[in-house]
Length: 545
Image 1 (tube, helix red, strand yellow):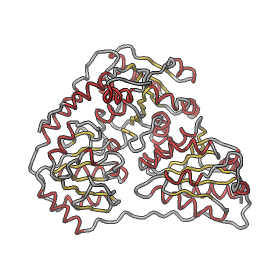
Image 2: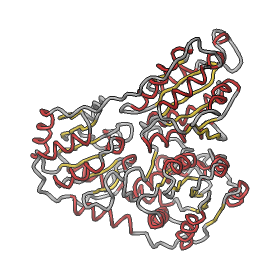
Image 3: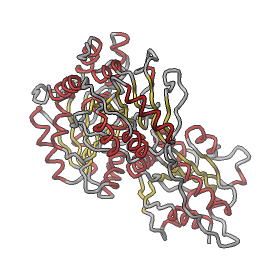
Image 4: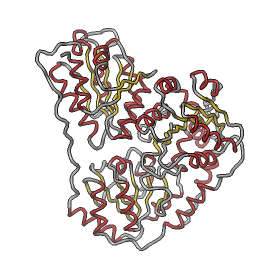
């Protein structure tokens, strides 16, 4: 058996079904071994797309997504998507071919120190220096990547090691994973006492709730104790927005309505909170609240996140046990706040102006998609509107990158989502800039018969940067560009393309795109003057409670 064949068997042993990547000279032995494997290889058009696909695959499944490149530029092209997964707490395995070990000690064509390149953006980064260690390396990579908090593991595989014949037969190691510990009873009792005494408690649910499959327990906990819930961008849907205790999404830097709940709160219950999403300084500036941290991992150190109490253990079990011994809250202080939030989200549902307002676009998207359908947001000004206004009703139905927050994730992420959830409609909303960063993957989607809807908010600008420039300086700098004809561009790949020319055309166009059941691009001119209006509105916001 060749080392590359053992490597592929180890991947099969980990349950890998799909690898996203590009073949190269230095990974040819692995590519050849995959021909005799059950693993499907998805050949992409750029390694960044492969890494983003693995990123979203890992986030939706909880199993490490796998991406593959060759040495040098192939490996560096993986970096952005890999880093995004690592910082967004999505399990991912990055694999790169490497030059022979006999030339790694000197200046040599396309040779980079890949282990040290990936080390700062991964939980584990290593090189296979001998064929005998392959089972250990692969098992450790997957164990580390999938352990809470999940992230990235990188493997460099030199070409001469991959091509070696093994001296003796070797086998993959047994897959094992730790079970999340039970929360300590003493901490459960202390949390119950704190919450029972609180007058205005509020819950901030983070992405850890979804990773820990604890959304049902979160809702029951909130209902039993009558405590309102706000979610971070990446935890949208952890509680249905339609629920009476949902305050929507927290995370904008501006002081939004949901922030009023945090202003009023005396106890903030952070459940599965990833600090990388929303810095505590933004919601705990005065350091005068009591914070309860409920998570599988201990709290990050931050002067604005000093805990009154930490409950470390399985999140679902922690919520159940705390809920059983806590006195429900008798205040209904959040009712008026929720009414204001709901009213605002629907206020422009019938706005007929064109180019279209972000609010109207998202109302139409919400009406067109079922509650279990998936919306993938790319990064840009539209992301802020989606985070604030899109009403997610179930976990993992609105995917937003908010740790690393890299442009270009939308289109390849939608491909991965459709592969994981083939029965659900998948849409990605992109700015015109972010769309062009990985638009070449339209060909990959068509080649693999992956149906998805790609909506482009078109303003021929880096809209989010203009928003910040205007706010800080009252003028913008170098944010304009020209776009292709997106309809013709889509058709050149063999996809379908539609351009919206009036507000009342969008909803029927989305419905038609769903029926088309192929790759569809929808070009929507957007009125981003609403960005400045929102900034001004939030700057003058008066809390209703």
